[in-house]
Image 1 (cartoon, rainbow, N blue to C red):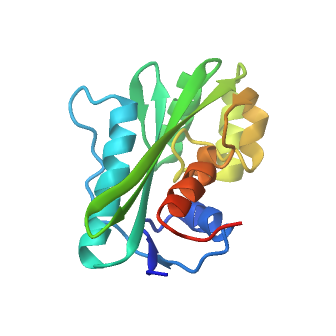
Image 2: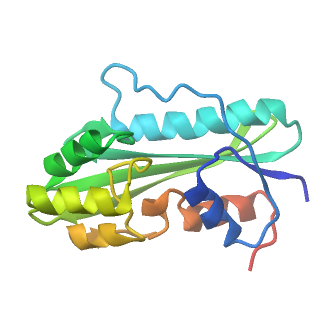
Length: 191
């Protein structure tokens, strides 16, 4: 099989992809993740997944490259990774008690040509959160590198009333159901 490369240094995506039991390398994509003016969260996630795959694909001729990106969608506005405690608290405060959609895109490329892409939308219904609950959560889990300021695979689940999804791995950062389908379509033998 041709070489497989994950165009991401996210430990979350690396852990998810390893579940498929395929050997792969990891490369950091050099992509500006700034949203364009009036770019929707869906368009942003799709564009960044493709841009990450394309950038790494250009450096690895013949390899199959997986790019992925996730954007939290708060009433049509994209929310990125908070980066700081204050930004995480502000994001969680804005999301309480609303339904937020997480757009997670994946793109598979080879030699700069898209082989396929997919988009998962997961809806997270936040319960009403107090300022103290938010601060305690952020201090306990430090979700500063996560879109939406939480880790659903950890304590973040305590912030929700419900999660509606067709692929629970998408919320962590890589929709494995779609990724496995794209890899099978590319000729990878998966169970």
